[in-house]
Image 1: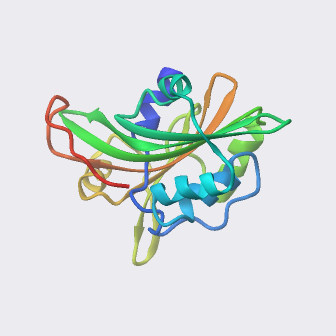
Image 2 (image 1 turned 60 degrees about the horizontal axis):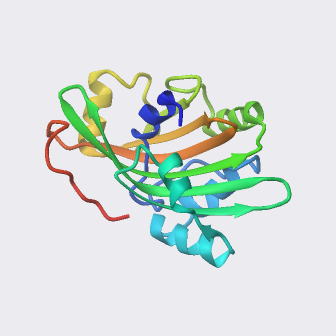
Length: 204
């Protein structure tokens, strides 16, 4: 998986899809699967169970090692059709953020083949604005407040650190892994410990 996707993807995830979400997803590429398994399910584990009920298969170990390198704990499902292949990856990861560490819960859907330009355009429409950062991957970050959604303009400033610390940052991402286009929904949060500190486990 490309290095840019690894770094950004590790900063993505929603601990519970029950948290406020964007409006209904356009039916473009893997966005429909992202909505069904990452946003609408009562937690990411429930999303995996729903995928199984829909006939998805467990992702083989070799593909898990290839596709889930940014995860410290992960499960995957896959579906193949005449048109191609779709993957669902759910798990946890940790990344350094300055002198501290961000824990993340993640839910990703990848599709191959996919029209990546159309997919990114659909995500821009869905989110209602340009990305907060990046081009590949493109990242949208915001905070849900009583007054509505408040966009985060930059990921490397004090505002971003504050919302990372209280666990209220929401993130969406569109990126590429080889010929596969991937979309992610995620919640990062700062632990206040250094990158070499003990891992914090958080159920999905």
